[in-house]
Amino acid sequence: MLPETRPVRLRNYLAYGSNDVLGAGSMAVISGWVLIFYTQFCGLSAGQAATIFAVARILDAVASPMIGYISDHFGSTRLGQRFGRRRFFILAAIPLLPSFALMWLPGQTFWYYLVSYVLFELVYAMEIIPFETLAAEMSSDYKTKAKFAGARILFGQASAILAGFLPLWLITTLGRDSADTFFYMGIIFAALFMLTAGLLYLFSWERHMPGGVPLAPAAPTAGMGQAFKALYRNLFSTMRIRAFRLHLGMYLGGYISQDIFNAAFTFFVIFALTGSMAIASGLLGTMYIVQFVAVIIAINLALRASPSRAYQIAAASFAAGALTLIGLWVLDIPASSPMIWLPIILAGLGRGALNYIPWATYNYMADVDEIVTGQRREGSFAGVMTFVRKATQAAAVAGVGFIMQAGGFVSGAPVQSYDAILTIALLLGIGTVGMLGFGILVSTRFRLSPATHDVLMAEIEHLRGGAQAPTSPEAGRIVEDLSGWRYDQLWGRNPVAR
Image: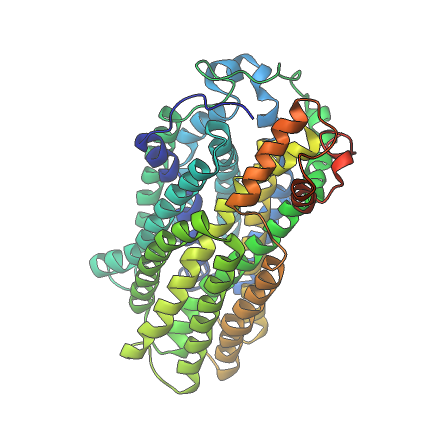
């Protein structure tokens, strides 16, 4: 493996991690508040709100993998050589990030909200996909990558805390019925996005950049036709890496469960537990504080033990929190009761770890891919991850919207029917726990750990030296389990990414 190009210092961890204010912060705001904003303040039906997500995902199905593929091949261009094949896109996205605030401008039409949402999603992909490659670009060490993931998730949880509490603070200032609450929230977050993206650009680097160890000569710049031709070949080839398929299963189980929970939670607190938007904001903020603590615990577990075991414990805690919330509704206990803190704490502990673990293991997927292909394809994996994250979040939020409308939910109504409330409760309970169960099932087959990663990296060096057989039978079994390919098919002797 390539040696370290530079020492990774605290400022690099902080700059890298701070960019998840955009990555996780924007997603926390959208998943927690956009359905409320569209249906309660903008006059859109739950179905119209869901349609906005669906249209955006169709466009993103092309854009996100395309950006990942282009960034993999951008190093041979003049701009790529000057600014970096990844970092150029981060720099270019900075002046476009205020598009987030435009999403929350009240009193507009369906088409305005559709276009503004799509615009931000494209800018988001332009910045976040190159960002997701940088941990692997800046280091090849397992613990260093885990620290990068930890810094990222800690900042993401801090931004989620802000996403939870900021509406409460703005409601106190502007009044509970003011739609400007969300617009000012959008302005504040857009300013933070620009600041953290700038810090990321200043304190990150790439392997091929001056001062680093050069990679092999860059391939000729792909034209648009070539890019489209190779785009989905690379997209689907990543799915032929066994560890990545299992990683995606755990990721989807942990994150879709949270998307469903977030989309339904505010409605559940307001209509099922007879709370208010201010109470829902305070509960979300408190849950995110607990998640922040849980991330610190999960970092230590992932560095010392099996990520899959930590995942299972976290999923069980989150499921217990969701089911306890349903129990409060069944027992007719309101959101103002002190008993509400039990499910909030249980859910927060589980969610924090579930946020960290998949992103910690993601940083090693390019290493598993390298032993299969002999290539470094961080951009392709980042494109797939971003597309899958945004697509599944949109599907979850849109699905909640469509199901709520089918269940009798009436936009803007201060009181909902029993059927509508029951639908929200079922979404919060069955939807959340069902996805967590799926993630737990997949995690039982995931065997990447600090010990197996060390074996993987040693075998990569072994193959780079021209070897044909594993260093030991046990090492061969480990890399075959991680990769999903026989040892004699590794190092490019297979159809993956050809």
